[in-house]
Amino acid sequence: MRKILRFDELDSTNAYAKRNCSLISDQTVVVAKTQTAGRGRLKRSWLSEPGGLYFSVVLKPTQIDFLPNLTQLMALAVCQTLHELKVQAQLKWPNDVLVDNQKICGILSEAVTSANGFEALVVGVGININQKDLRRAGQPAVSLVMLGVQQTEEEILNKVLEHFFAQYEEVLQNGFSAIYAAYLKHFPYIGKEVTIQNGPTPVRGRIETISPEGKLVLHTPNGQTIISIGDMCI
Ligand code: BTN
Image (tube, rainbow, N blue to C red; front, top):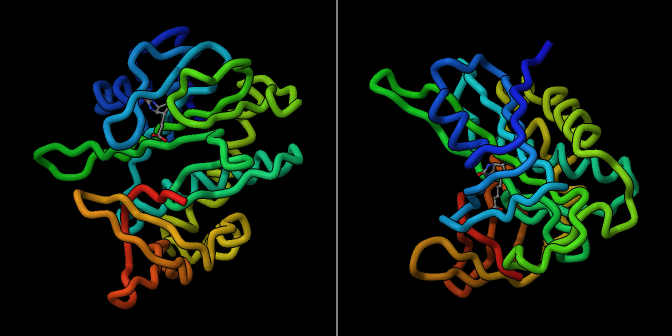
């Protein structure tokens, strides 16, 4: 049985998991009904009012070659869950989930290291479920209830974890290739012109494909560029 630690309120499920990492066993899930200091990627904040689902999965694998692909797996697990509910969710590389270009899920993964090296990967997930107003989210955002889908946060948590752990061992062993076809099925941006923000100089180009390692392959005026991390703007 997977351990789930539940809280009414935390500063951030990621921050809690990192602070208490040495006391938390592999594959434990930390869930909070609200967060007072929810954190997003690129030092942004994450609006964490009641009605959303906020959780972090603490992973302590011994095989660590494919850690970045675990975040992509989580995005895929969320996308697969939403498709089961007939919600046409799409993946925005590397790990956002959108519906009609509005964000429904964001993921922030953080590694915990010590003098002994890698200790854990904390995969933090925020999914908009029962919030009725997301105008304060700071970006176009939508929740399941706004799409007419009635689900509890608990139901979505269970389904996402089921999808994630069904594919987890295979991704640990084989990396992105284990989910390549499934990921591409939900990635509608091949052939599209995008700008990738990573560092001070944005890179603009046309998406050729996603590489078998899960990287973005861009055709730019300077030739082919392979991008490992960044924020994709359409
Ligand atoms: C993003 O910027 O898109 C990532 C958002 C990640 C939010 C989740 S909510 C649960 C976990 N705890 C946090 O503080 N952040 C992540």
